[in-house]
Structures are given as structure tokens and as C-alpha cells.
Length: 293
Image 1: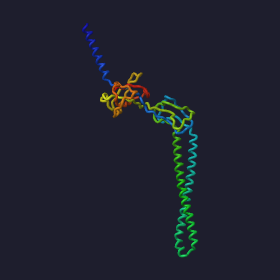
Image 2: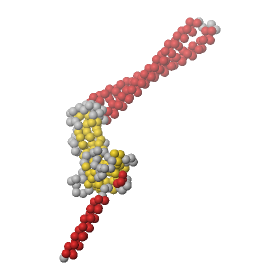
Image 3: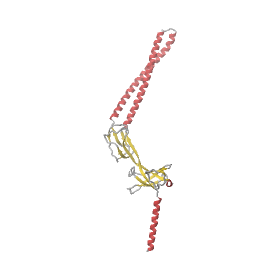
Image 4: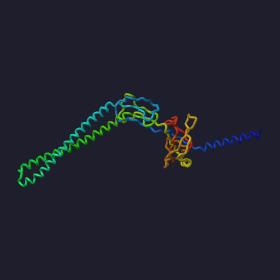
């Protein structure tokens, strides 16, 4: 009987030894979950007239998150289009005037050249040549003015077209849409409020693509490589999640003060980025996870 008890005791010790050895062989590091945050803002400072979602709501890519009142900017676009039509009409008239001025100038220039020889031979009075020269000078001024007017109208046309383009772009940005499928993390204004230009109205987090950074010692770095599958454990979850090492920093750095590593005596560590599968969106940015390498 004593022999059986001794044998059982020996087997238990072996199991404990194996388990202890297995725990020591695991590389476990703590990281903080991060996710891509998309901040939605608008260059328009006007009332928010539509805000259908709340914080925590999941939204699809392209969903309308907020709509800024576009009454003023729509009026500005209408005025810019009207001004553009007027400038284009003026430019058409200006082109016609330029053609007429060029024709008149060329006519008097040719007439002046032909009458120079006649004046020298006394075939025409000198006053006639002076009158033609005066008409040439007048029409040259008209031609120059018509050319200058065309340049001015062209610049006004370009400036108004650019202004209209900016207004139309601003009109598009009055419609704040989700750039990706995600979760609304923060809403900073309520419907009816007027946010300043370019202020953030809402933040959206893409929970399908989350990651964490680990800070691994040089000794442990030899045991990991890009593409390696890892196990991610979270407090409160019975089942672990899967992760993949997709980047390892090429240069060592000092351990961030906010990060705890298994061996905090090692000052120099390498940052390792681990992407984590988060299909059910159980992970949120800021959560602590333990990654077994």
C-alpha cells in the first residue's frame, strides 16, 4: 500500500514539474488595444439639422452621420453660378469687341502704310496722312483695351469658377458620412447646435481592425517572427482570441514607462505590432490584453 502511495506521489510531482516548466516557457506580454479613429468635421459653421445616431451605434461605410444646414451655402452657390453666367456673357461680348478692334486696327495700319508713299509723292495732302495716323492710334488703344479687358474677364472667370468649385466641395462636406464600417465612439455636438469650422463632430472607430503593441526584450525577440500566430487573452473572456505579428521595429528603444514587460530590468526593447481578430467587436480601444508569444 505504501508503495502504491509513493508511486502516485511521484507521478503527481512529475505532472507538477511539467506544468511548471510549461508555464515558464511561455512568453506573455501585456499590450493595450488600439484602433483607427476617424474624426468627422466640416468646414461649414452652421446648425446641425440631422444627427440620427448615438454613441455606441454601429454604422456602415457611407452612412450619413450628420448633416449641416446648407441654406446659406446653397444661396452662395446660386449667386456664384449667376455671376459665372454674367462673366461668360461679358467675355463673349469682349471677344467680339476684340475682333472688331483688331479688324479696325489692321484696316488703318494697312491704310497708313499705303498712304505713306502717296504722301511722299504729294499725291495726297499731308493732313490726310495725319488723320489716318490718328485713327490708327485710336484703334490701337481700343485694341489694347479690348485685349486687357479680355484678360481681366478671364481672371474673373477663373476666380469665380474656383470659388464655385470650393463652394460645391463645401456643400459635399456638409454631409458627414462614415468613411468605414465601424462604431460611433464620440459625438461632440447635439442636433441644433452650431460647431465652429473644422471642429470634430463625431469619432468613428473601425473595430474590425484592432491591434496592440508589445515591447519585447532582445532575448525573446529571437523566438518571434512576422506572420506568427499568437494567442490573445482578455479578462472576462473564457475563449482566447487569435492574433498575428505583422511588424517588428527595426531599432531598439527604451521601455515606455507606461508598459510593463516580464523582465523590467531590460531597458532596451523592440516594439512588436500584433493585429487581433475582432469579428464580434469584443475588444475596444484602451483595453488591456495579454499576448502569448
